[in-house]
Amino acid sequence: MTKPLTPEQVAIIDKNHIWHPYSSLTKPIPAYQVVSASGVRLKLSDGTELIDGMSSWWSAIHGYNHPALNKALIDQIGKVSHVMFGGITHEPAATLCKTLVDITPDGLDKVFLSDSGSVSVEVALKMALQFWSSQERFEKSRFLSFKKGYHGDTLGAMSVCDPVNGMHSLFNHTLDKQIFAEAPICGFHDAWEDRYIYDVKSKLEANSQNIAAVIIEPVMQGAGGLNFYSPFYMQEIRKLCDSYDVLLIADEIATGFGRTGKLFACEWSDTSPDILCLGKALTGGYMTLAATLCTSKISNTICSGGSGVFMHGPTYMGNPLACSVANASIDLLLDTDWQTTIKRINTQLKDQLSGLDEHRSVKDVRCLGAIGVVEMFEKIDVGKIQKEFVSEGIWIRPFDKRIYLMPPYNISSEDLKKLTNGIIKVINRLY
Image (cartoon, rainbow, N blue to C red; front, side, top):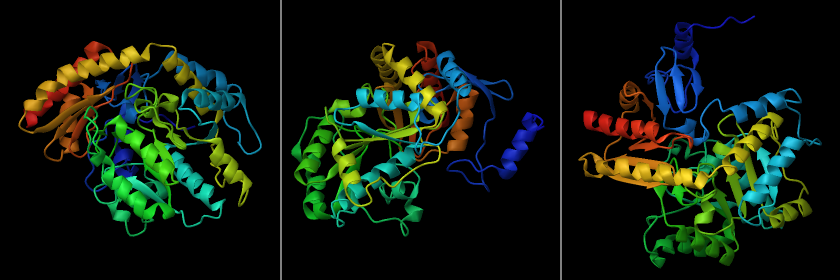
């Protein structure tokens, strides 16, 4: 029987053997050891408690150790934890897929389940390619994406991320060459001007015969910079895709399930994509699960031409445990007045972070829904600043030039104030 490790043993193993995301093994930044979590607090091995401002990379929207989500897993584990999805179905998956069809934008009535957001993007790209190849339109094999965009770390997903300033420029010599439009430059509240869409239109005019789909993060470019842009932009993208016979893929992995103030960010522009990617908050941060939804037109075309089947099948597709906790998480969200909650968080973020606009080292402060962003002029030393945040009793992990908050929705006003005050104190101390 494996014996429990002491905190010291964990630290040694971590240092000698564990490779953390986006990190160096030769010059690692500190890894803080979490031993438990409850509500919006993470407890470290030394007894320190940190208020979580990250929702564990935007996924734990209900916080940690939630009784309803715990119960869903406990109830399901006594029935069946996993079963192959090939030739087998089950109630948790059926419930989840029907719910997703009901709550997502109109027309998305087919659901393909997978096990991570990046894979849901791979599925979306393959759906688009197979849609056209099933019609023997093999020339439509490229994608139009956007600078500053981010869609995941797997190979196909990397190819539609920003090729220069994104996280994957090291792999440009091996990735498929896609077409990139300029990033949206229209602020969320800016009055619409047709010039905002000229670059996309010109690229579609020149390349639509070879483009399978446009892929975009609605309203907010996430890991590419937390950039908010006008909902009118999505409306125009939808019109252009229809005009040039190109599919539209909406990547809502980061924005889905209320984060921007709408249940799905596409609702800001009242648009519906041909394919929709979901992940992160789908299970409330409990288990890895993702979904790719598409229209019947796409599924019917794929299944009536070429191989007659969609060529993808993850081993853990439709995992009953993950589906069960996803059902509980969605119920928990929809059974509450989540819109009022998001408005409260948004108002507080705006009020308490706005003063940083005047700081000499701060380039911009912006908020949307339950998202608050402080963008610095210079790139941030993550290891150094994170140590300062921990000393303030808060967990915040910046990236590049951005310090941001995406707290769990169940955070109290008092705890949210500790997060915003902590950011202000650390910025004033270090800059």
